[in-house]
Length: 504
Image 1 (cartoon, rainbow, N blue to C red):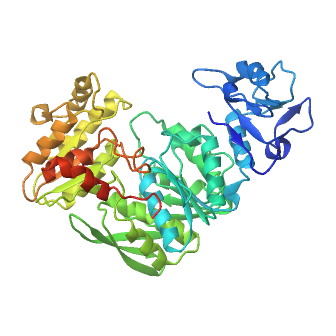
Image 2 (cartoon, rainbow, N blue to C red; image 1 turned 90 degrees about the horizontal axis):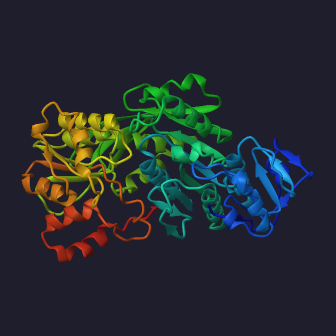
Image 3 (cartoon, helix red, strand yellow; image 1 turned 180 degrees about the horizontal axis):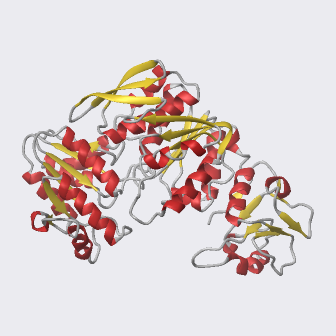
């Protein structure tokens, strides 16, 4: 785990951790911290964290040998340096990291986005709205992190407490007025977001995911997430999602709702849809405005509503909000349309749960007069029962189902695809093609004018967008190579297509 070091001098642990119990010292002043004993340096405070592989409490002596001047722990330890006892070492560390960074979220107009799906697109829309308002804005999302001047690939699936602190500090140093943070459930559960204050907290939805998230865990995540609101902060809730809607009677503080199909403060009705764009009417109170977007589907309309409601809660003008929404023409791997001169639609989407895959297939079918081909491979994290549910969704939604591997080079993809077939009533109708490249080419070769091909289930763009490099296996590259039929031209064409900035 990274070390965090203050650029502005030492901080008081007693002020930062007001409920902690201090032993052998009234207070401890530190300018750096670490949670890995091997990373400790002279003057650090060491945080004893328990992980699946190790217990930091058993490593305190080694951390002290390396220079740690104090230990923050959840139980009393036989050490000679001052100890700070806390209920949760992870939450304590995150708060200290934010304090060492100068608590930047207090000085930024900060938007946090949590939920089962839609976080990445909503964060891009929110950032675009701030840019339309003339703000410099920083972003942390699964596509990459940006301080408005420099953007980088994420180092992992879940940002750590030091990463949140470092990037918020960079945003403040770059004179950002606003910050947009995609907050994965894992980061909230691991308390890595503690100490971050939010002006608006957007909850996109609470789907069942891949079958591994219990209702209790989801409820706890939401409770922790909404605690991040600053005094006067606003919760933005999706009233179309019944799990989110149940929260409304229990929420304290200000709240704005959005929906397409339920009563809400901010609503939308679709005016027209085409294969490459859709237009909907955005309504808020007595005001309304048409919004034309190049990304299709109800899921995208709901993401637009979430961002619009947050913008309105922050006092932005509706005209500015609409301009920001329309400026986002594509988000890599999120209902991304590939236009290479072919006579049929080709869409790439990261959908990997039953709910998101259902919405993706529905979005494509709504604008397709011919057949819909679905190329899909589940990730290895989903359960067998959830894979069977995915198979049921594909059979019911696709005219032609092409089942493939999600991970090229995986040694045994067939058992995973057989679990998909368990959800089919007529498994003999599905095409099972383990090689993903071959599966994509098969769908493209057999699609005709008026048809559409949806390539779903493979999210490999987060590590490549910020760096500008192509990942080892990119569904878009495979599809474009076949569609253009000139492999030599693909790198140039994709380089042009991939000019996607995390901000703007």
